[in-house]
Length: 455
Image (cartoon, helix red, strand yellow):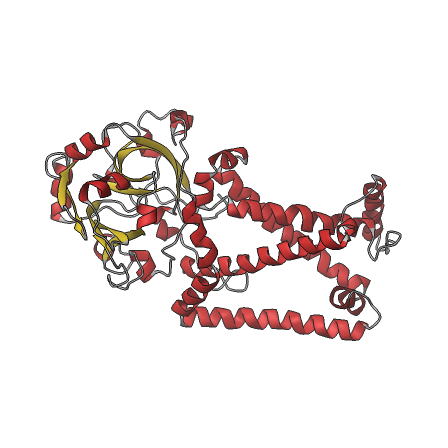
């Protein structure tokens, strides 16, 4: 974790307390609002990946890939000589038949054919839906935290390339080099340089406009995101989670913890109502009742003992993906939501499942606005095999309060905040967009997060 922040020392603290307000001079629009930053990230990623795919196909179709792929080991030797020439403040000669020298050839080839595919792969591998469906790929790459580090160092690689490349453009002649970029030749350097400069200025202006627009009207950015990103991100619903880690992988086992739930990181503050505190004092078992109702044939209530009986020993050992980056592996005992839906029988037309927590954000967590914490899932996500109502963590008889006792939701295809803790009731509905602000969850309503958190 690359941070200068100190970890809070008090027992419970919210992940939201770790937010940082980065200047738009070095970051995407949104400032401290991570949800807005995610919107812009995925909007720009859609364009970035599309451009690279088109460029790569054209490289193959036209044979231009040969410009980037060395045909002799001598290219590497010559690149070393070119590096020494630059360090001596002299200009290396181009490779025969090309417009750039050997060092440039290797640098451009690395950025286009190695660095870019790697950043796309490691970016996609951070999607909870992709990571938990293709779990072998995730492990082969070293796990989520290694993948995040590789993705970060890819960014460092891009920055290093630009820091070196831009001065070299001026060293070789700004108009001459930018004309080759824009027109494919240097016969009209002034025209090429002017076009390139206008494009560069437009990028800066667009960033300024996008930042101001985002802070003034975040919901408009949300609508733009839904138009551009939702068509492909919704395809990830076709990738149900199917990971299952060995018990030896549980967070804390590697450092010899006996009570491994102590090392499964919590986020958010437990409810502070008299009702919840009374449930906690009585160890939940005899007093807690989960209500399941709404648009169903057979509404019912279930105690923890009844949930245990229905679960029949079902468990899953899975990786928790926090939207802010941390991960934990835990073994959850519980009953799949699909099994509960079979018991209650959703009526024709039922489309979504709404989960309500005992937690009230303004009352229990002063960092946030007031309001009951709730979450919702489309029926396809609710019926996924690893969408679980959990009542036990790491074979220790219960879930600790910090992790959502007595019962919580587990959505293994989504980022962590949607795995609602301190579950009070479940309701099947035929419309989620008429509940509170209509966006399907507390953070979706108040903090510009997308309901589709599969990426």
